[in-house]
Length: 143
Image 1 (tube, helix red, strand yellow):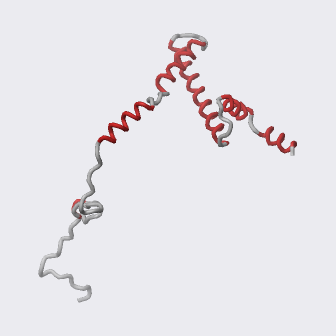
Image 2 (cartoon, rainbow, N blue to C red; image 1 turned 60 degrees about the horizontal axis):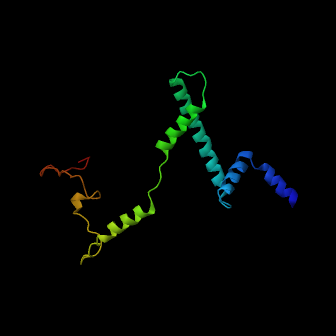
Image 3 (tube, rainbow, N blue to C red; image 1 turned 90 degrees about the horizontal axis):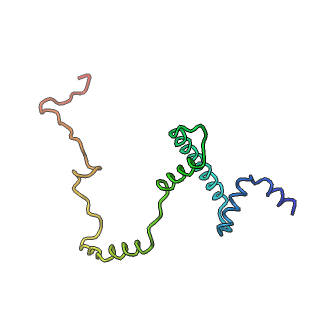
């Protein structure tokens, strides 16, 4: 039994183990297995984008090598424009109160959906068949 657990534990990639440790350090003890994979993918993408931005800043400053200031500036740029804080719950409560002050419309005497006239619907006929002139009746072939 213990051998099987060690085998399963050794098959888990190191990065996934580290992500699980990070989650546990934040108080998340149990989550779906794909969460660690998604967070790992996000962190790699985020790191790559920050480093690319830092390289752009370094080149703009005509530096030969990337330094900590470039990385800090790239992180600051990402934080300011990529992530937003959600409004406080009080904001949502005030918004809900103001919306809920407006009464709902009364239910009409006729219930059901009112459909516009057929000429204004997408399912209505949108073409006309031009009838042939009188006197010119279609004759069967061979007569």
